[in-house]
Structures are given as structure tokens and as C-alpha cells.
Length: 485
Image 1 (cartoon, rainbow, N blue to C red):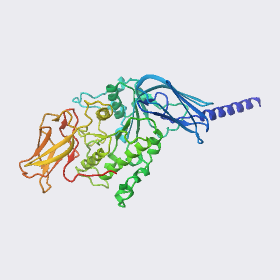
Image 2 (image 1 turned 30 degrees about the vertical axis):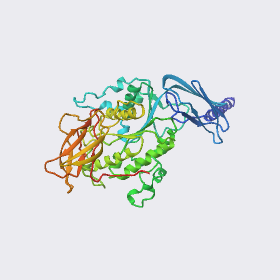
Image 3 (image 1 turned 120 degrees about the vertical axis):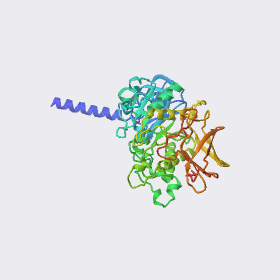
Image 4 (image 1 turned 135 degrees about the vertical axis):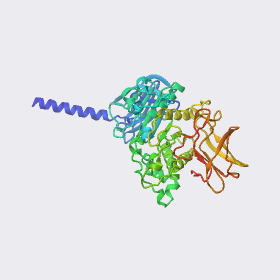
């Protein structure tokens, strides 16, 4: 009886202890090894016993707040300069203490999307590339040991607070093997340029459409979805499914911006203009829950793929993907966005998951460095069509993001330009660079009216800027247009 009583007493003591410790908690994203965003206020939040005073201490800062009637609390640490010196963050109430170890301050980015963003470093290390690819980082998993690059892989089944305060890792070994290759190579380039701690949060689901990454209210906030009775504008794709478990629990963790690589699943549905509006809804919603309508949003053009060979409910042609590229590019009208081209990064059109993820990560980093870190010598994007004029039998094209100048990246005549007269029949055209513009013509057309560039899913065009970035495909005839409100 004494033995049973002792066991019962120990069980009760354990239950009391667990209950006491459970009174103070923080979200999964706040934990050991994390990177806190520099140069902006940093929220630390969680739950405690209602009415308890919560004291948060980090470095020389100490902040206090009283938990509300629901036990919720949130404090704001003052903006801090970057620091790779590890520190401890203390969170205390009258009955509980949480100590978080190895905390640094730097730049934090959230990357999300579907399988091409989820594509892991483990897969990258197994790829066999041709000898002509000289910069393939095949041994990256063996050499990656930079303690200033930290990673957090979102697992929607493990985002509840727990006593381990785990989730953040140094970007090395087994943690890195399972992490987004795009996210890691973005972080690597950022560190090479900034030399401050970099934190990357990866939250992706293979095969996911864009709709599950935002709640239904995000769609209804746009007149395009709210006011249109047409069935093509109906909201489907399980809105909010991943948002509720993989995005919302991260907010308002302080971030510098977002990286997005998604669209293949929506392209398979034959979407065009509606995808641009969905991009707008997503960007609005994410900026809203982070309470910052200027957070950068940089995204990836889906790579060339043989959509025209696919069989399904939607009929595809070789121009279906260019039309989707056009829809993706419309989101550039939203402030603080950029899109990187991938038309040069897939040489197997039957592969929906092309390699070269290190190039994707680097190009996304160029967007951030040029736009958000005052790296004036860096160009954010490849050439983007701006305007045209007809001059006799030629059409002269102007571009944005020409950088140090337009160029043919292989030294050969510019390819993948077509031109048409008023009959709308496009034929191959000669294109030459003059005065940092492109002049397009053909002997068979004396009165041209329109030009198309790279308007084919098999596009491998050689128009670049001299900074090594490819031009985005475009058409001057009947392009998709949009007015975001």
C-alpha cells in the first residue's frame, strides 16, 4: 500500500509539474538556434497564466507585459543590429522560465510553394549533371558548416508549442539534407554578400495549388472573385488548408520578406488571368498577417515543360505555358515584387522538376540584394519588355532591367523572335541589339504590327543582360492586362 501511495504521489507531482510548465509557452517558430530579424522591432509572443507578468530578456533588453484574460501575451524587442554572437533569450513568469539558447540576429526570409521549392538538398546531391555544367555544387552537403546560416523546416503536424523548443537548425548534416535547395542556396548567396546571420523558413507542399496557401477571405477581398458570377472565377482548391497549419502559425515572427515558387499545378488547370489575381490575393493576405504591406515578395517563373504533351480535362498547346508565364508576370505590377526567369534552366522538357536549384536560389538572392540591401551594382532581374514602336519595316523594343546592357549570352544571333503583320500570322524574325534596344524585322513583312519573344514552352532564348540574366518571354499583341485595386 505504501508503494502504491508513493507511485500515486509521484504521478500527481508530475501532473502538477507539467501543468505548471504548460502555463508558459511560445510558438514552435520561437526556439533554440533561431535567427531574429535585424533592424526592425521583433515580436516575441505566447501563452501564460492569465494575469501573470511575463518578462522577456535578450542581451541588454528587458521587456515586461501582463498576460491577458486568455493568457495571451506579446512583447516587442527593440530593433537590433546584426550579430553572429550567440545569445540567450529568457522568458519568465512567477512560476516558469524558458531559456532559449544560441540566438543570433540577422536576416530572415520565408520560402514557400510546391515541389520545386520543396526540392531537397538530398535530391540535389544525387543529380548527375553533364560535364558542361561547371558550377554544380554536388558536394554542398559535405562542405556546408556555416553556423550563421540557420534553417527551419515547417512540419504541419508538428507546429504546436512543446518543451523542446526545437525546429531551428544549423544548415548542415541531416537537417540540411531534408531542407529546400532553393532556400539554402538563397541563404548562401545572401551570406556571401552580407556576412550576417541568415535565417530561412521553408514551408512547402509538393503538388499544392496556390489556393490552400491563403484563407477564403483573401479571395473575397478582391472584386475579381467577390463580384464575378462566372464559374471560372469560383474559388476551389481547398482554400486555407495549408495556410492555417503552415503559414498563420509563423506570423508575426519578424521577417525581411517572402520567396515563392509555385504555379505548375495551376498551369495544369489551364489558368491564366485568374492566377494573377490569386497571386494578388496571396500577397495581400501574407502582408496583412505580418502587418506590413511593403514586405518584399520575390517569385519564380515556372520552368519550360512539355505541357502540350499532357492529357487531361484541359487542352494544351505549345503556347499554353507562355500564357501562364504572362499571367505570372502580371504580379510585377504589385509593388515590392520581382520575378526571376527560368527559361534557360530546363533541358529535359519531360522533367517537371528541373535541377539548377542553386541558380534559382542565387537569382532570388539577387532580387533581395538589389532591392532591399542597397547593393546598387547588382541587377535584380533579366530584361523585361517595356514598350515598342514601329519604324518602317522594323519594330523597335525597349526593355527594363537591362543592367550593364543587352547581349546574346552565347554570341550567336538573337533567337526565338517572331513578327507579324496585320493578318496576325507570326513568322521567324531577325533581331539585333542596337543602342541597348532590340530591332526586329523580316524581309517578308514590310508593315509589321506585333512581336513575340520566347513564345513557346520549349523556349531556350539567348537574349540576356550582360549581368547574366535571361529576358522574360512576352508578346506585344493582345497581352493579358490587369488593374489591381
